[in-house]
Image 1: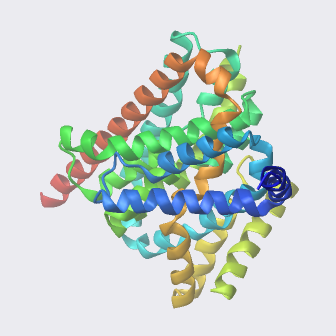
Image 2 (image 1 turned 30 degrees about the horizontal axis):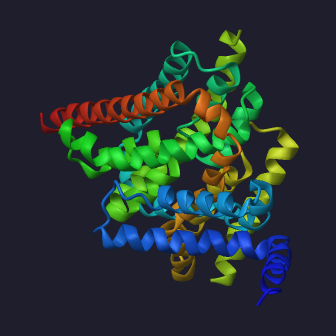
Length: 243
Length: 118
């Protein structure tokens, strides 16, 4: 019995060095979080990403595992953001006829929403004394992770901080959207989806797909367009005004 | 499943090559998305297994954000120092941008419907 502890720690050292642990931890934590979310009747406040992140951070802190070790395994999950982004073409294709008819209103709403997201994040952060890097990491927070990290790097933010802010924005947007739209009396599922995708990217879109395919498709469209638009104008904005 | 996944990865790869060759400001997967949309439009139909694979991926889209979210550990000190500015900016800006997008779109769609009715 006395030699069990060193053996366990040896086993831990061995397992912690392989990607298996980080990968399995991510999937188990997410499964657990998703079950809790479903048991709650898919309440927006019981966000599966928030629960999964909290569980994983707790396990890593308790075992003294650094993030870099965890990410060696978790990167395989992170990588799937790429093909999932490509796959967004499919809901867009299915709704294309409707999207085309609404093209002009959608574009105008997108530009308004996208500018509001960036400018208000910069303004509020700056006014409350956020640091130089934090303000620049905040600016692309409404667009999906892979795009936001690239933009943050270009404008002098910290890509890994941006990733955290993007995920937090997504979680908050997914939680707050239904209540906000009900208060503002916005009922059209297309409008709700498009606004959610503009402000809260992929996590908002994941939530939108759970509401309905129509809401999801409009959210996916907004997320793609806002990703492209923000990637184009934010570096320009900082080059022009960025002192 | 496998052929659809291969197609998605292939288009992402072509997207990355485009981005590198032409120094585009958008990431590879977004170009891949546009290429897939173009391909579907050109073929004019959607295979069942492609639809199935895409739905499986998109159903669990939020899972793929988890590893980046755990990165909050690395920035714990900064987040603790600047929590008020960061959370106010996130909450305020997310609510403002959702409301602004929704109001603009709703106004324009109603305006158009009224015009069509006349």
